[in-house]
Image (tube, rainbow, N blue to C red; front, side, top):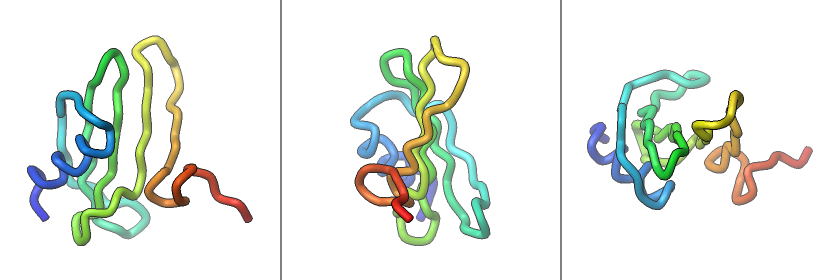
Length: 84
């Protein structure tokens, strides 16, 4: 999968916005595209698996926040929480 397609997948996940950066990374031994998006004062970072297009991580940060909100929706299911 190319970076352009990863951007499309990430934008679909967020709903809309402007892609500010797409970078190839390795996350826990898995190759991903890290797609950064800005939308309405919020910054998103969505990791898209380079092999199959799955979302492996989704993080948001408001321009007013000092920390990240990490929902990990692609890794732990619909609600972004792991129940052990």
